[in-house]
Image 1 (tube, rainbow, N blue to C red):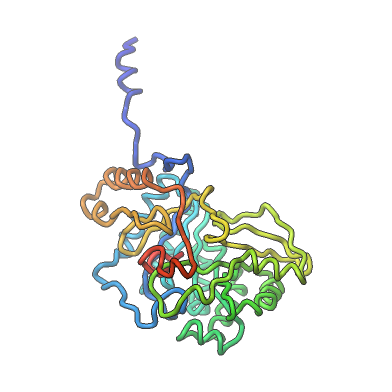
Image 2: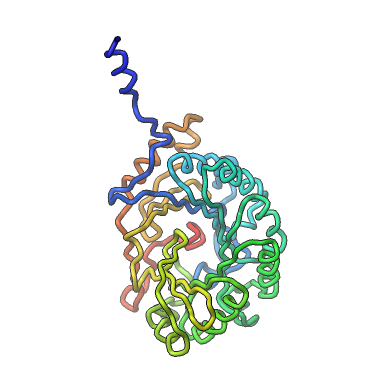
Length: 349
């Protein structure tokens, strides 16, 4: 037997296009968030300026290019993929991408395809989302007061969002409500919002406002630590910590009085980075290894340099090798500037 020939065969180089992604701290990257557009039909005050300058459409990746990038990440071990924006459902022909990515679930290469939306387009797309393999979505909703909803979104109509949520539930989608907790704006409404969500079988997740991008107001005026919000809720509700996880940064409690779950996302009061398994891809092909850091990798150049995914995989691996341990968010009067210059709508949270 020619053992030398066997040795040569066994010494073939590792196929980096399918090699798993592990960061310098031993965390496997299995969750990709993709911002398919920076555009939105709302202008939420904590997220963006009222008169935003959006990216020129020529700078955006095509839907086919986004599909190729997503497929490259799935081949390298991503099992959960979330589409975000801006508002993902305002991107023209977005259902083409969602349907193509849904095929990855059918093939067993992806465990979950989901999206975060403001709900404005759900009445139009909910049934088709289910048909494409989407089973769970997050809807951003900070208040049930129509006037305050218009105030915080600037352009939004609450009735349209509630209609979209109804359509999503009717189509069989599991809906989670995301609300940014804002002092002196919606903090007194949180109990009502929680009862409403739990009464319809929806989880509610509260989020601390994040210092990202210049907006038209001082975020410190409305910053509310969720430790304080929890203390207030515990005056009327019994909250019990539970190990339930959805793959994201939220820590959950069960609310005895409603029978529902309440999630808490605390980027400032309780850094959630130790178990981070996520990276974020923008609609221009920029890969951010951390929401709260500026380091990024240009995947658009690698994507367009060659049709060979080996080079693309090499660039992805190099980027994952720079993933930091965590973010450095601070929000107070002494640090009255964004932690990062880009708006939340660029990376989708």
